[in-house]
Length: 136
Image 1 (cartoon, rainbow, N blue to C red):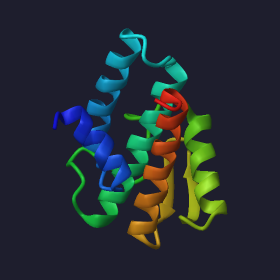
Image 2: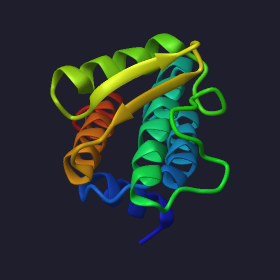
Image 3: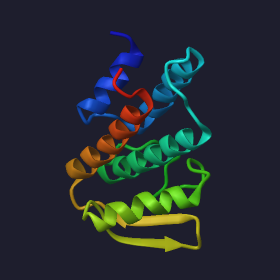
Image 4: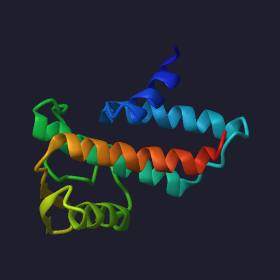
């Protein structure tokens, strides 16, 4: 099994980590070059949001990289509206609680249940992948 196939399995198995997102994007870009999917800059921005979401879970679990900081989305995400949309949606569904914004650069929130949170983020990614690949 190739790394690219493995990363798709991680999405399906809810075991995807933030460091898998660049590999997933590499696969998506390759499939876009080969004409299998249409990948837009908006899609890439969304995968950056998913990467941020996974980084925040890794912080909670104590296994985040040293350069990951609580709520700091500036080094990962370029589009504030997308980060706001996903956090609002997760708070509305009870996946996160206590969402707070600090001077536009921090999105702080509580993750009550890491497994539910991971499943939710992987479901968002899986849904996005399904929209890119259709019924292939």
